[in-house]
Length: 236
Ligand code: UDP
Image (cartoon, rainbow, N blue to C red):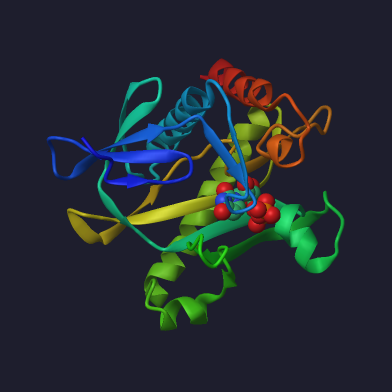
């Protein structure tokens, strides 16, 4: 059997149900648009378990997602969606590209969250775009954009509170959304939510507990992911 889609960190497989896909988490890690690559034992399991735990909580909080159920350590079943080709990034504290673009130091707390959008295109290096670009590129309608913004803020409130209970500060994160194959008028949260796509700093020590450990060669990458999982599990 051939994967329907293979990305940098996951594969998507067909199932017997045409509306349901199997999403497999790989052990591959990439950064800087795929320029830096490595493999980490257990990464697939850790991200799958963290993402499943978070998706379960989001669903319980009434936030619709693609999640159906976990089937094993590295696989989940998800509703088939057509991915909206826009990455939605939410920032609470300055870091990463925000600092590069503005020359500001890392660690400044924003008065309100920043929401930004980039094209989901490895070829173009995920360029930053705004609502007008997205409308003209026909990637989402203005109504859908309003929904993405509102959803992203809701997810931010929910995740910030969840991670805070786990002693972690949610600095920024990336979300992806999809239109249900069974009803494209319905947009749900898709992709994974894990330390690969979130910046998380330990509230007590300020230590980075996310993919920046890999990006910046800080070491202890999987140990940090393991700690994030442990703290989330202790809450539930
Ligand atoms: N992010 C991601 N995938 C991307 C770009 C960003 O998961 O293709 C996440 C990243 O891990 C961070 C947040 O989105 O938590 C903001 O990333 P930023 O724009 O600062 O990009 P970076 O410079 O880190 O690539």
